[in-house]
Each structure stands twice: as structure tokens, then as C-alpha cells.
Length: 280
Image (cartoon, rainbow, N blue to C red; front, side):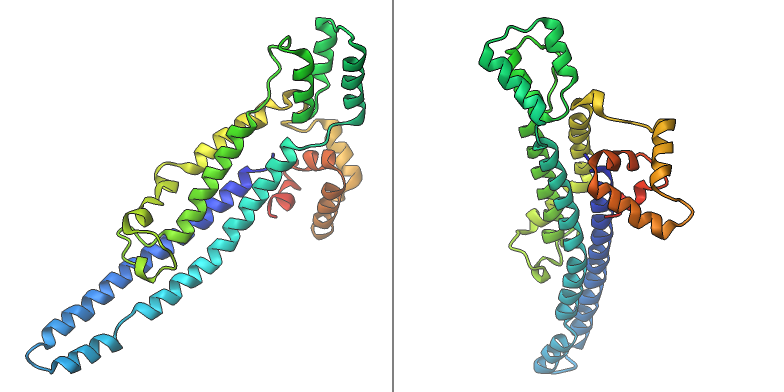
């Protein structure tokens, strides 16, 4: 599954957003304190109505509310975009189609009541190429394949949902370390709730989620996951793409990846071209 680059982009977006809000909070507190101090110094020298007018005219709320919304309007679509990318990868990973020949083989064995030897089961296990094929084989084997590992779908989706909640929560509710901007933010959170969303960084939620994803990636199907390109792989890629023309190569990479998932997996391992796919 492609997720590392997306998680990295979410984190960098949130870092920039949090830094912006924290700076706004600091500036806002300084500005409002200055207005308050000035108003205090005016007592006894000016009328109460004039002092109230001064405070009203120098109230920075509208200006800071606009800046918060501008920052949120930039961060929120980016975070949602990359979360959707991760979700789509999860859905594709766990819902990858079962090959007809594999399904037919399993159904034939079930219908005929054929008793498989340990070696026959082992050969079937080695041919598993996706999660649902593993589920089918596991049901057929009825516990005989003790080393047939499948990622925990429920735990993986739960980890994603929690990660998504914290990422979106920080964008929606973060109002500074002391929540001084909460009344200017478009949120129903209480002060303590707004501050608590910093858990994304304090508790390393990105790392927690990445560990769960890494475990899922490593399990299924371990024998089918390429970690580096062979010399033949590189020669094959070179027959498809001319690296001398980067702009043309970029479009060709995206074209090939969209048309064939196997070629996409090879291109993701090629340092020359992986960036074109991961920038999406």
C-alpha cells in the first residue's frame, strides 16, 4: 500500500498549519493586551464612551478570524485529499479482486470434497496474491496452515479512522496552546478539547498509524512484495520510458501506472520515477 508519502504530506501540512495558528495566537494575545493596557491608561483622562469606542475600533477579532479561516482553507483540503488517498489504498488492498483461476480452484476442491495434502496446501498458499484469496484458502484449510498470515482488517481500518480523526481534529479545533483563538475559530469544541488535539504531535499519531500500516504491508502477501528492483526490472522499465526527456517521462510514468498495477509497483521502486507517482 502507498501511504508513507501521504502520511508525510499530512504531517507537514499540519505542522505548517499549527505553526501559523500558534503565531496568530501569540500576536493576538500581544495585541489585545496592548489595547487593554492602553484603555486602562485612558481611565480618568477620557470619558467611558470614548474608551469603549477606542476598544471597539482596535478590536482585532475580525482580522484574526479571517486569518484563521484562510489558514484552515489551505490546510483542510490538503489533509482531506491525502486521507482519501490512504483510504482508497486500504480499500484496494483489502478488496483486491480474486483471480478467477484461484477462485475456481478453491470452489472445485470444495465441491468435490478433495482432501489436500500438506504439500498441496503449501503450494496453494504460495500462490495467494491478495487478502481475499488468503481468506478463501484459510477457510478451506480449516486451521491446517498455521503459518498463513493475514493482516487484521478491522485493526487496520480502526487505526486509519483514529488517525483520520486526530488529523481532522487538529485542523478543525486547534486554536493555540491556550486556546486563546477558540472564540474566533469555527468550532464547537471546549477550551480543553481544542488544546487536546495537539496529541497528533505529542503522541506521534502519524508514527502509530504508520506502524500498523507497515505490519499490514509486511504480511500480505510477503512473497509477492518487491523491495528493490532487479537488473531485469530496470531493463524492462528502460524499454518503456526514455529518461532523457523528464517532462515526457513524467506523463508516461503516470500513464503506465494507471494502466497496469504490476508496472506501477515497479515504478514505485525506481528512484527516477517514483516521485512522479508519490506527488499525487
